[in-house]
Length: 439
Image 1 (tube, rainbow, N blue to C red):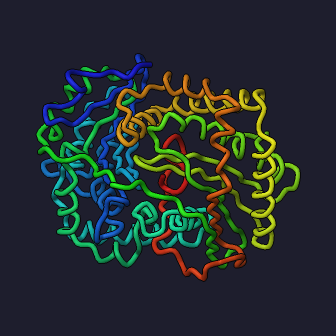
Image 2: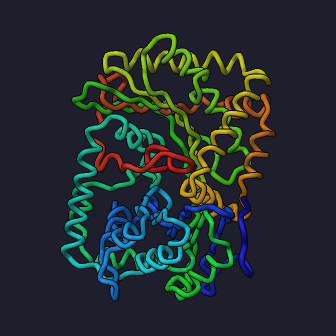
């Protein structure tokens, strides 16, 4: 399985990059069209990218009289979209022989400018309902609490979905202005994984509207990278469960040390033998769901270890998790423990990337957001294989110095008196590059 480049810079004549992972013989292909604009790039209208995502997939395409999602489903496939902090991605997963039509539909969808007022109003109501439901779920809310605590007023601290009030006020003209500002060759890209050869993918998109996009600048790089600020925020909810996240600063997605943080999170909260899973779940029965991720962005990164528990156990679990981490960091991990974690991280990535959609998503995240256009799975596996106990010790050294603690659904511990998190929670699928919290 190889990533193929077509032509100079693997780009359309407009400059839009085209990345292809050709999987010869694959009967299913994932076609994705990316807009490198997310929640952090919004200015006044917070949540506008999320609403645009909905409208692009639900507005009828001029000349076709059909919605993109309906047309792709009629091909025997599935279609959806994802909004994150740094990108919007439209995708179709279809039988490979339908990939050409799916490519045409997604390209037309991103460039569609026919947004009827009734469609915008209907999708704004859908988004409001999505946000309302998520705001009552501790597992969703806690991610927004974490990012708000870690990044404060920086755009990375915003909830991906915006707020109900802000989204409900948006009109077609607002979406068109946002689209006009961001849909250009500097921010649009194509990533395809499946049975379609790279040359064919290039021809498909070269014949469509993405090849005629105007030039434009790539996403702006902040003069000063975002800084993670330690602290604790408790968000109370009237629920019979609670969720918590311990986390802090990590490294950007394109940083070679990112593989070390991936292995570290496996040791802390990954498989059944991980530190927090073994003690908090298996031995003490204080949580059923324990997880860990290292999330990278274009200029920052965070690590997160999270779990759910009963509200009355929340402070006990926080204290226990912090204590376990501190003791383990002082003790360190052996080369044998690190080797086992390396094998699991590498194996899980390979298993996940059997899905053409996860494959395209991971390639797009590293190449387009992480600034590593030559990224390959083989290279990433080599980075993982090179991680040793010394690398883990270096990653873990400052883990608790800048600790961020976020809870939702439980009693106030050292709460800052914060009220509800506006627009908390945007539901996106979990997987490589699509972990909980909308990246």
